[in-house]
Image 1 (cartoon, rainbow, N blue to C red):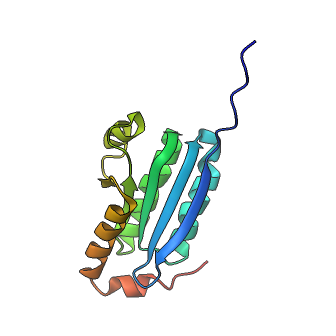
Image 2: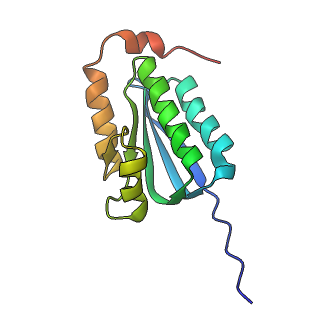
Length: 141
């Protein structure tokens, strides 16, 4: 009899890396399944409503991501950009199956091989952005 597979639901961590620049880092460990989309969307929206203007999402420990969760990433990036922010940058292993898939499925989201690279990219763009960023940050629920 085959063994039941262990629970692979994603463990999600979010940290504000630079509050002045509105940079958050989200780490994903496990699988972002279709049943995770509500929790995933709430986490991304929470970062945005908390003042993030750029979010780096580290998917190197993520084994799979459902299309609905990719759509939530794309929507969060669009919302950040509409508010004058930089959007979402991904951190992936370009040699992994997931990394190669995201190049196709999430091609509008910049991808980096390190969290530091993704955050520096967001910070670089943010520092040269217009003063709109300062006006967009205070928004709250």
